Length: 267
Figure 1 (cartoon, rainbow, N blue to C red):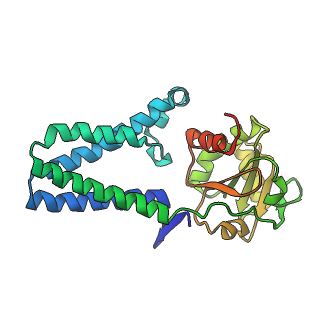
Figure 2: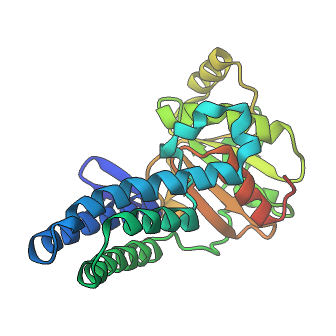
């Protein structure tokens, strides 16, 4: 399972865990502010802001070369990219300004610890099942013979599940097309979900995108195989075809390169 569905809304498991952790932190500190020390209320607000900002800046600093060419992506927080250690340092700096008593410090630490345990626990419980073999069903290829994902076994592979009506799919597609065209050590498959070849060709022509190995998954067999939901989804397969990791939602350049590097591809 890579996602949590609540009514019409679908959240990546990591996003849902983060939201749940932050919600728990907010509720816990609100109660503690009334029962222990009012300062905990102000501390929690600034700790949350300081932690998130520091975590984002830490991530940007680690990948400064990538962000230097596209500085506005610093604000694309929906793509993910937060450095946990930097975030922890940010929380500690805020705590040094607000927390003055042992009683308040213990209460704040308890709320923070509870939230982190819940965050990490839910993330682990909702992670996709890794190690699954590549699906063997052949799909119609837009410009070639039918092809199965398992046919590319022998080198690492990136399998992107997408549709032209999906806004985050459209935003990430130029990046995926660029990376796919720039390397031959990793196989890229673009598996369209539920659309016909005419719709796909019109979209690619309009956006001036050139993609090799575009597969038509009219009945959405690949998401069922991996038990995934929502779009876009990017699957990272080892050279033996087993699933190494899965990313739901728009992917950033840093996340894409890091996942490929873990597969054994150069960046």
